[in-house]
Image 1 (cartoon, rainbow, N blue to C red):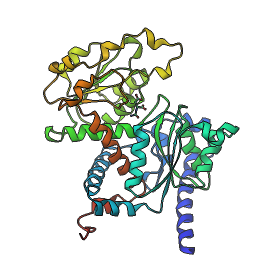
Image 2 (image 1 turned 180 degrees about the horizontal axis):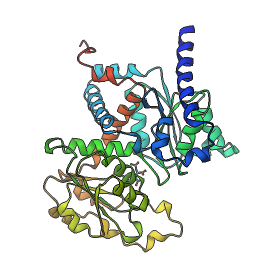
Image 3 (image 1 turned 180 degrees about the vertical axis):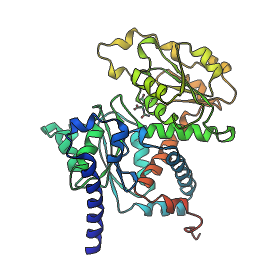
Image 4 (image 1 turned 30 degrees about the horizontal axis):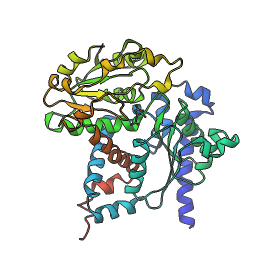
Length: 379
Ligand code: NCD
């Protein structure tokens, strides 16, 4: 008992010292003004990600490590003895899934990822069923979770709320890990991880992601998945991104500045047909009309940015079609059976890569990667 307490205290003190040095008692407003590069250290502990909040936290070696962990988990989980073993790894940990913005895939895949690693899961899916209805602030709500769980996975409608929660908990005596499951129009880093894992897997026999042309189609102004994926593509060589959107929904300047700063090749167009002939991957997205201010989406002809069955013949034979989902009419359902349609596999990849991320954040990746050498199961 004494031993466990002292380990926890040691961890906490080490993290706290680091935070104190970095933070120098900055208020949230002051801290929030810092660039992601400056903030990243504050969301790390002992040289590894403690809070996974934005794509800029992932380096190429870490991405490759996560891909390897995900693939290994996928392999081990295929059979009951393997899954039973995986489920013993984090059976002493609990997670809160706080998803107060609509979600199907991200929620269920995180729930499944926790299940694979044996974590117990609690959930809140609406502020109308938490004490926020009684006037409790989101900040106090988050702090309450930290009394009960070891990990909070969070999707919030307020831009920046996930990061603010991580900042807040890191300033308490009980910081718990936070993963961003989607925050406003801003970032969706774990979607970017699963998108990249899918690209990597699809191009394994074709030299990997390097040198590929990736078309991103649709609402690029408000789609957080496109933003987060763009940040990660920086780690690959000679990538070309073709952004295809209606004029009003073009990718915003902050992303263009990022591309220029990192000398990444990109084009902008509204001509989907031409881009289809050229792209190795076509990443479709829906219109994000929940972010409309004055119903502006209704004046946009989005059908020009739909992938129709007859468009398939324009595409390369070995190109892939992706979509973060949910879809409306951006992709004809008739396309679902085409070999190039990757979106259902992409959604399932979300479960594996999220399990990999959680395993890495709890520092159990080596025992997973060594499975079969040091930890083979007796059948
Ligand atoms: C995306 C999201 O929530 O940003 N969905 C998801 O997480 N798979 C894309 C979307 O809602 O259009």
